[in-house]
Amino acid sequence: MKKDGLTIVYTGKGKGKTTAALGIVLRATGYEKKTCMIQFIKGSWHYGEMDSSKRLEPEFEMVAVGKGFVGIIDDKNSKEDHRKIAKEAIRVSNQKIQSGKYDIVILDEINYAVNLNLISVNDVLDIIKSKPKNVDLVLTGNYAKDEIIEIADLVTEMKEIKHPFQQGIKAKEGIDF
Image 1: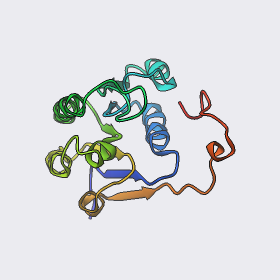
Image 2: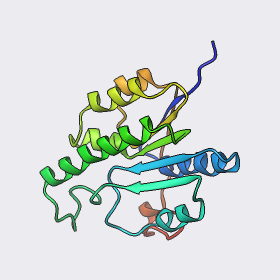
Image 3: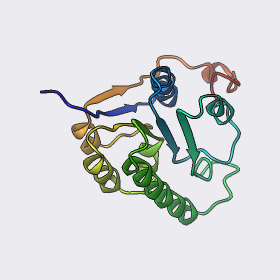
């Protein structure tokens, strides 16, 4: 049975989920496919893909909807503010997926948004079930729920074996952000 658009999940505690999704962007751009990445959590910090995404236009569009990482030291937003913006990210995601403009849509860190109770697992399942059959959908973030894993076509779990942070090495520009 041939299936058109796949649902792909990159999850797990290891590094590389967003990086794997960006690898799809790079590959798809080579075939002039249109890709959109909606970022659910990132948004207030500067990171490399904010600039590099512009170099891949017009094939690639990145939309940072989030207000930054939730609950960390410099997070000045209330949980309710994060919930409102996550609901806005759901609205933007549905609009982009249903627009007919994109071959691939990436919902970056959407699994974290579910885990943090910013959105519900049903919000994500509704997106998956209602996507046009020709659109490939990529979901990233740790803590992918069993219901999402069950409905997905491809699931890859990133497993941390060793991380430089354990040796006191801070996040590195171009590698980690």
